[in-house]
Amino acid sequence: MQQETWGQARAELLRSVGQNNFVTWIEPLAFSGLSEGVARFEAPTNFIGDWVARNFADQIRYQLTVAGAPVDRVEFTVASAARPAPAVAASPRPAAPVVPRADEGELPGAPLDTRFTFDSFVVGKPNELAHAAARRVAEGGPATFNPLFLYGGVGLGKTHLMHAIAHELHMRSPEMRVLYLSAEQFMYRFVQALRDKQIMNFKELFRSVDVLMVDDVQFIAGKDSTQEEFFHTFNALVDQNKQIVISADRAPGEIKDLEERIKSRLQCGLVVDLHPTDYELRLGILQQKAEAYRGQYPGLQLAPGVLEFLAHRITTNVRVLEGALTRLFAFASLVGREITLDLAQDCLADILRASDRKVTVEEIQRRVAEHYNIRLSDLIGPKRLRTIARPRQIAMYLAKQLTSRSLPEIGRRFGGRDHTTIMHGVKKVEELIGSDQQIAEDLQLLRRLLEA
Image 1 (tube, rainbow, N blue to C red):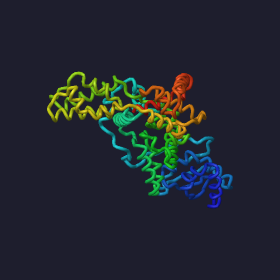
Image 2: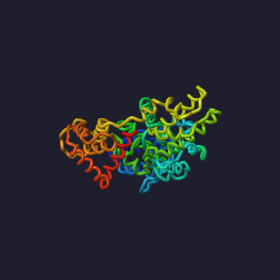
Image 3: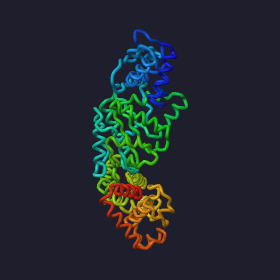
């Protein structure tokens, strides 16, 4: 077979497999000869040779036959080592890709925090489903739900659970290749690989792991090239039945500027919401933390009712709660005093003031306008288009529920509307909550954002 014949086959392959697949998998191949009905190619890496052999061998053989070459099967060798990848004869459908392990011992992931384990995670009603799902994934074995998608506000335990999964997998199966990193790190490594012309090494590395964990995936939204690579990495790992765990600050469908095909893939597994903490969960976290501090600060006295007071007053997120207790124990040890209610109020005055922050009508209007991608001036203005009127009614409802303003006061902040208009808007949203699932979900998300 001459190079011209392979050139004809390549042109047809470009049309049949598409530009992205062609550039990634077919273009790096070099034809090396034909004998006894076997067409041989050199691939730049063993990974590419294996992948092409499993996924594109049939199409290559077919296009070569159409171009006039009597080919029964194709075989791939690695250019540097001349080690043959599996020869694949014609078959009606390509098998799932088999990816060899990368030779490097260390994966370029983010370091794991030794404090974030399942033992140190306090379980309560708002996070019990997320904890159970994370536990199931950490048991290893075949992927039960793929991907596991954890989402929720700041400081609710997403990162803690992801670190806990990684720790548990390492303990149960030390040989497993578990890669944990943030979406920002994934993007940085992808850009670096493009700059250094090492994109094939990047692909080989990320497709050779057993478990891929990506934190804060919302940060790749709007980054087209990174989203493209993430999409292909996601598909490759799912095809191999490798586990994927993703976290974000909101549900997949609510991440703005994230490609629809990625949203669809993320929603095909188990999507779990970590709800804002309730009083019981906050108290449990404080009790666990205080127990640990008693060993660190021997002899320090904690008066009854202090933890209950903090759990009631600091409702923002767990990080603020733990930070407040850390400051309180440190201050009490430095001044040599018992931790009383008065000491807590003095020491944590700024945190307590911040926790008492009230939601304003103006903040609600801004959040609603951003969520529905409309101008704030339209939300407050006289336009009656449905795409504006419904968000306006939702903002009125939230203003009534989350602020202490009277209906006439709310009306004045909505362009001088009468209080009866506000009453009508509130009543309409109350009716829709029971019948329109999307409205109910929007309200839940907006409440979480405003109360965070």
